Length: 370
Image (cartoon, rainbow, N blue to C red; front, side, top):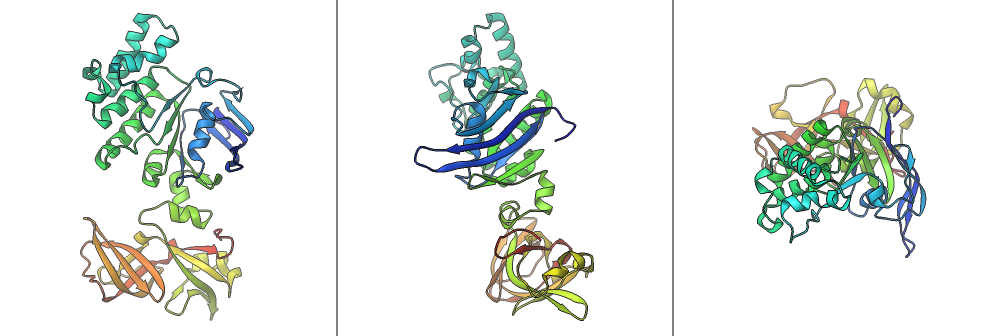
């Protein structure tokens, strides 16, 4: 992150619980000022533990955390100038919305007129002025989430920490709140570290994404970079919906051309990628291609690097603008996201066209991208 002021620096951060379980392994991360950084990964990957260590809610086993160039390892959460928004909103049920938002300010002995000004500013930003005299039980999930955001905003923190804040909301409301949090980030220009297990949330919200698995950072980068150039099989399979197809294959050279092959298919590797993969000749590999790079051949004009593959349809899932097809080619399962005009039917063999310029190859043993 050269050239940017850094808001948070994690150095060799490790968390080992009393039972010996290591939840986070030596994380090194630099988070720039005003950045929207998303930690994403499956349940139990260590993302929430990392966030809680930044917040001071979880003790660090080893390593250092700096916020605004200040070592905060031994500082209490209240002294770190961060604000955290939780999955369950953590609102006081007996207090009205106004008092929930104002609570932290009252604890810090802020003068009443200043509290009133801050509460009304935040509630105006979030469109909840008319809810200030209600209690949490009288609010919908989305309204409660806004109150939790309001409580965070009034503190004017250096850093916002979000721990799975949308996972209790229904799908439609989640999309709406994603947009609102992005707008809030643009408006407040404050650093956000956001934890989610939802890769769509990660891809649409983050300026940068950290993909984690088993407490280890797998890859850090901009959303498109991770989508187009995954470093390993895990990142490739985790980002993207439906997930990337993985087929066992072998790289073969015939008459100067290179192919990925198995008993049921033979696909030409594009000329432009020949040099990159030429040293893999006769090597067993995992061939990866995303569902959106597989087309119904009958609906697609031929294009450069388009390669045919026959597969038997098993399931047809209409999704509106596209149809997701689950098919089988030999022992390999293939998922394709094709034009909604497809005539594909279950139990019928069909010709697909694969855009081989979008192919990926992975090492079979170590699962790293070539």
